[in-house]
Amino acid sequence: MDGFGRLFIVLGAVLILVGLAITFGGRFNLGRLPGDIIIQRENFTFYFPLMTGIVLSVVLSAIFWFLNRFFL
Image (cartoon, helix red, strand yellow):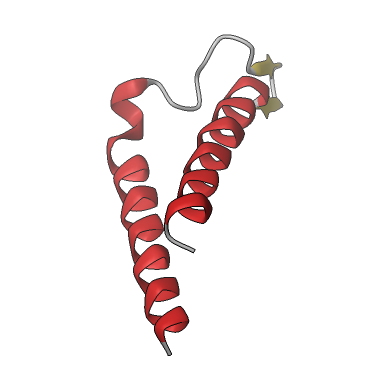
């Protein structure tokens, strides 16, 4: 049962981090980084967050590596 307890603690911490990122993400221009592709036409807008996806991938990979290394 120790494993389940740790898992719930880690999942709770991740949910808190996601909630904080959503709440305060607009202040840090998350989603409007240089490298994000935006094409706007009269009736059409295409948005592809390329750089935002790369940054989030690196940050989440580092967080999960840290959690896996030290807690699991």
